[in-house]
Image (cartoon, rainbow over all chains, first blue to last red; front, side, top):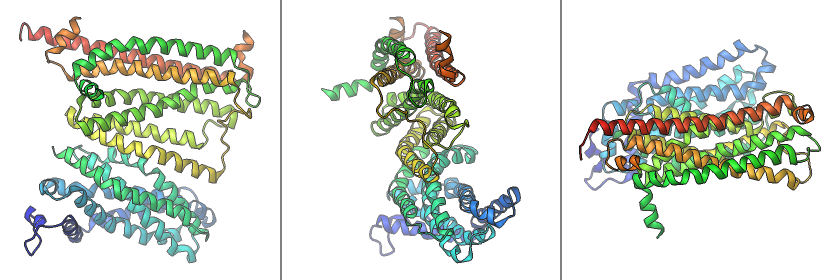
Length: 238
Length: 245
Length: 54
């Protein structure tokens, strides 16, 4: 997409920040269709990691059920880290990111759009297949659909937090490990509240409290992360 | 008036000279306070009615933990100033803080483990404070790692500054979430002293230690800042004068 | 004196704690001073190399 597409709406008036954001979101979603491995790989990774735990610890469902929330969340966290590498990589490579920064549109909004697209492409599918993993780890079937919600909200928080790390490590060669080192400490609260919410859900108890805290983190991320990421991107492009 | 001071602080030669003059004013009071606190804590303070003599570890553990947090906040504040006002000196301050903070985080963790062993029976408990300290250590290591991965000083400064600011927002969140998580799993928090109220004789050495360590950080910061400024300003003219005096 | 060193039986945890903290303090001092000394030496060397310029 060329820059002018961001600056002019079809009718020729000046494009609003929201309109530009919508364009970027649509573009990222469209591009993902051409590179489905970017969506599939994290999901496959998630599935593999969840399988490793019963193999390494115990096949007894009753014991697996106890560690299921933790396993699901660690696997989701690791899969998200993997997926984060795709967030900026292509756009940084072909200069699109630079165009975004130069376009005169609010870089914060554009990155917000990219991060949202990223969540739709990785977090949401992760949340949708999590019940399967949960079932494999012994979660009772009536609670399986409930697993979707904490992971959906939590993965949004992770995409936002991870976007900051990805923006910071833009200029770094082989920044993948550094990205993980930076993102994991920041993701600890999400992990704690998310796992707790999942645990309560599996036990059939009310998980409103940790879910609300998880939501609070996501909201905080929504307001702060795109700004921080935009600052980091600008610095990297200087 | 305050504004002229602020502007002067942006000038490397001014900061270098100021830091040189201030160093002994931090160093000597720090030494005196720490020695006094050692005497007060090891000799004068009475044994705790629950933990006996073991509680005296607090006189090294608490200051280390305090340092790890205070230095991080200083680093984040300096980073914010550097980002907002584009002050090189502020970034130099932030860079000087990180190794010091990381080393004291390690000290806090090891002394915490050594304190925990007689109290809990194991070297490690997922006590909220120890767990948050561990995460803080990871934050420091991430900061240092990020700085190291950029050759260009300016970019290293600004990128790591963003990380420091984002991290500081996270520190209370991490601490709160770990406390909450820990209260669910009901591990005893044995870092408290057993007395119903802390006796003055116990409290005063602790406060002296905290003050002493804070001043100690000031002294180290002055030394490191001078070194940073010299490194960054290599080849400029004012250095000739500054070093000959 | 030996009662003091024994610290009511906690000596094995207490003294290493103090030792570790002391070591961290001392290492910080040494490290900072060495950094400054090296920076000064570097800067002086550069000035000498620049000769009588400016």
